[in-house]
Amino acid sequence: MSLKDKLERWRRLEEEAREIRRREADWEFIEKQPPRIKAALKYYIENNDIRLSAKLAGLNIDEFRELLRKANIPVVL
Amino acid sequence: MSFNPFAIADTCLLIDWAYWRRRDVLFKLFNTVFIPEAVLREVRSEQTIEWVATSLAEGYLALITETSDVIELATRLVERTRLIPGLRGVDMPEAICLAIGKLRGYVVLTENRGALMAVDLLEELSSVTVWRSLEIIREVIKRGLINEEPEKIFKEYEVDTKHRFPRTDLEVVLHELKG
Image (cartoon, rainbow over the protein chains, first blue to last red):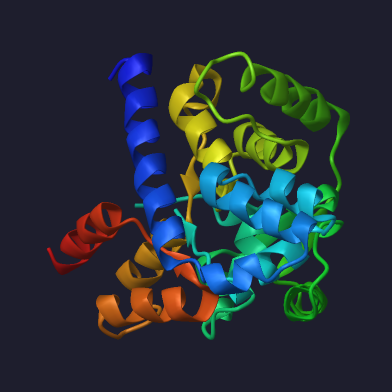
């Protein structure tokens, strides 16, 4: 499989994962959060970058994972 | 299939596994699961710390100090993953795990998409074995370390950790286990 094909496969997988995160997220919980936390959770849903999302939230990666659980946002992998 | 008795785990893997009711089965699969200092520094929650500390005390987990060759390779991997458009960049904690996987042959345990993509896309990492929870649990079941319905075990992991296995990948694994 060529590099281009592999990248396309990963792009499709990520799009599927994004849809699952959007669908399963507890949006009511997310909208009630302080602006920084809310922005970080939305960033994670769209971009699946837990380390950067944690930094946006001002949290450690482990603490941010706990927050994802509370927001019902699954890690899809 | 035989594989290295040693594994190296990244942060995302540890913080998910700490929530699974059968988490210690990991130590029946591997003699020792190493964690780099960079990963240990990221572990903060009570649930994860408690599991990591207990497992370190029992000798199932072991701390590994990054040597200069590991740091050099990891730094190069961080840079390389940012040179290919579409490839998700890896950060140092995951890059250190990948570097140790390559240099020491340890199985890399990760829930980081960037790390998985890097192994798939970078020729330099083609020899590295990288497993997500999906592959770890598959091996646990294949080796008879848990003798229950595979669907139940995967579902249980999803419920405990709020992880989701991609349906297509899960179906392939379930088919393999039933075959």
